[in-house]
Image (tube, rainbow, N blue to C red; front, side, top):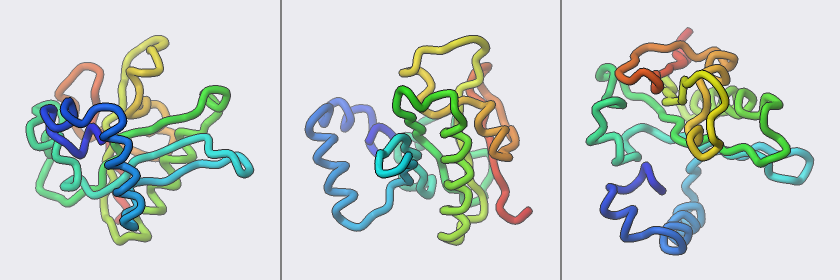
Amino acid sequence: MWWRQSQKEHNQNSGAVNKRKFKRLVASGAEPGIIAYSGDEPIGWCAVRPREEYVRFEKSRVLAPVDDQPVWSVTCLFIAKGHRQQGVSTALLKAAIKYVKKNRGKIIEGYPVDAHGKQPDAWVWTGIASAYLAAGFEEVERRSKTRPIMRYDLAK
C-alpha cells in the first residue's frame, strides 16, 4: 500500500489498517500483482499495475516519468526466505511482462536497487537490477547512484 498512498496517508494507515485496505482492494476484483508458487505454496509476490495507480510517484524526483509514454510499474518484489537467490525474482518479472502484455500494456518499468555487495532484505523490496537485466529489461534513466529506472518495451 506504500506506493498507493501519500506519506501522510500511509503513516495514518500503518499496520492493520493498510492490511485491511489491501484485502478490500483484492476482494474488489482488482489484480494488484502476481504470485509465484512452488507447488501449492506461495513463495513470491510482484506488484505490477499502471503507473498512475501509484500516487507515491507524483512527488518523486528520482522516479519522475522518463517521458510521456504510458507505463506499467513494478513496485514491489518479495521472495520468501528459503527461495531467494534461486531466480524467482527473474521468473516473476518475466511473468509480469506476460501479464502486462495480456492487459494490453506497451511498456513495463521497474525501479530496482543497484548497489554493490549484499544489501539487507528490507532495502531491496523493489528488486535488484541484475534480476531485471536477466528478465530482459534495459536501463533507460538514472537520477540516483543506486536507483536505475529500467524498462521492457513490449513492442520489440
